[in-house]
Length: 394
Image 1 (cartoon, rainbow, N blue to C red):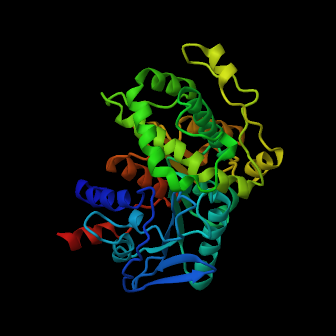
Image 2: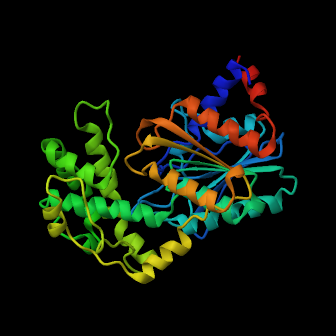
Image 3: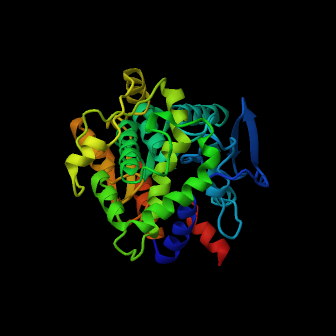
């Protein structure tokens, strides 16, 4: 791939993977695109007049359960207002995405919705050649589980910054951060981990301000919190901006998403009764004072059954993950690699580390490389249509 072609390939791929939030605004539907509603789930399908037979499917990231079901418009719109499906159609690709049938912790439902969407597309367009499933953050987990469970439906997958070890590990990470945060800053929330009021989300903006103040004004306690929970830090941030942002985002899942997870799992899946925390100035005092939470076995079984990866790969899976990700720790990649090795699937797995800080904060070169490797490993082909698009832009 020449340098000029790579440049435009990078631009297109990069805009495909902007993570959270979705927009409440519907798009102006381009020609050859249709939006349909199936029991509240919104579906966007675009098929160009001259179609190369390939389909790109997009799995969006986490959307708070309090938000309305919407297509991931912001994730698919470039800074200049160009709608990504329009670009893909110019290149000859079909495109499909869905709002899912639910927000919040939607791994099970999102996987079912996307799988049904692909099957429906193939029934209507039997000449479909390749189907590439892509997704970031929660969508990265969904992408991985679809490649594992339904290899007959997909040519390959690209999972970016996803909790690949599975949601049980991620739930533990979020839960540990919440209870240790409450130990160091007990004046922010007036309710325990498992007692989040249904209307707590209405006060989220005020909580964000309180969290920011607590983190920024207490660097010593913040360092202990991050050391104990093993949260990645931004070495280039001289102030506390990155720490504030990380704390707010992690706690958002606890406050905005806890009751949603509890309803879907049939109980609380997080527990820390046997967890020993270390890394503070006084670990004994921390472990004697931190809130202890007992998990529901029913909920733990649910999360393990529907939100857990296996590492069994019959089709290629490429992953891209920042090494200093404070929201979904890079440790997920190492745990998933162990699963892949255990199941003898290493030949179908390519893990690409991005050596920078942040959640899904990739450079265009990193994204380009990951997607190019996916296409090559899945089909042996260079992505078609991009040269034509480059010529059109000149």
